[in-house]
Length: 169
Image 1 (cartoon, helix red, strand yellow):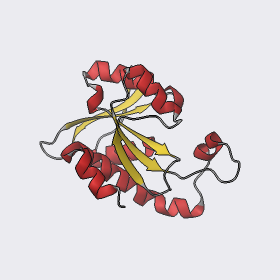
Image 2 (spheres, one colour):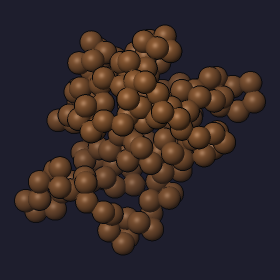
Image 3 (cartoon, helix red, strand yellow):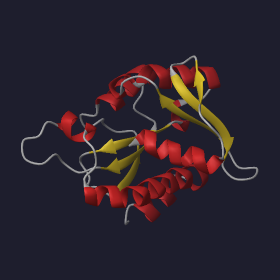
């Protein structure tokens, strides 16, 4: 989910992702004319090993953890729901756990894009790696657009403003 939201944001910036030595695809740009500088990064590792690329890019670009936003799928909130927070636990999300370990802190922002819970006894990994259902595919472009909007608002106006606008959606 995070990769898809970042692709949407990259399209909005009008750039293209390029390979970086930190084992990630990176796109640098500005949020609007004269807006803040953004470094969008799509780790090229398995999701569970995202920490290395995130920490490597943070060092390379001299970005403190409190300026990092992890955009990720979240099974603990319903599909088509977006929640944001600063810090906190990883909720069993191995990618977040790896980022927290690599950054030596949990104090970074998260844009949590709801995918809902696995049905029945389906394994979580199987659930989040499966193709979207017919109904979800119809809603997905809107969800990706909303998640990109949420991340951009978080950057421009801060966590509280972004939460007020998007947590009710």
